[in-house]
Length: 265
Image (cartoon, rainbow, N blue to C red; front, top):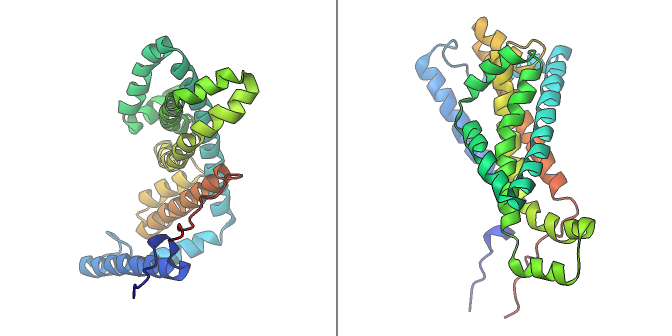
């Protein structure tokens, strides 16, 4: 008599969450052990100290204003970078000359250190614009490359079918191009959110932008408030993960869920 094994994708949510909790407890416990070994909150704040600092910050209106300011700048940078990446991806996929001309720019943006770009932008732009422009440039190559790849990966027989049925303009875009590029664009946007938060907050820190999450990190470092530094960092990570989940759900809106039913024996 065969014993049925439950596939990994059918394991209950309790099991998945239980494993995540155990992993989190393990790392927090290891963090606490390292804190006890060092014996100095100045070098490494304990988990409880960070939770207390985060709770205290969360009770201040200025904390939420800083989160809103940072989120607004990064969202604007990600949006502009995604739009520019889509346009450049479409142009370079369609015209080989544009690919030849613009590819060095893509390589230059990828190779240049973020800190160098931020310091350069501080000379060119006002401080509030620096996180927006930095985020835009970090997002642009990711979206550009993925959109271009998605357009190149459209099967030739699909293109021939579109020509046979005389699909042009909006109909071709809606029925062929968007469905083909959507998985690549979704993956690019999910990566872009994390990159945007890293680059945007780094720009706020280097520009000492007050009233922002990066400004809070900078002040905590100046006044040697290690627990506050960890708390601000935790807030950035949590906000980034939350926004990434929202973006992922929005990009999956209207998609048909995959059929995971097993075939009948």
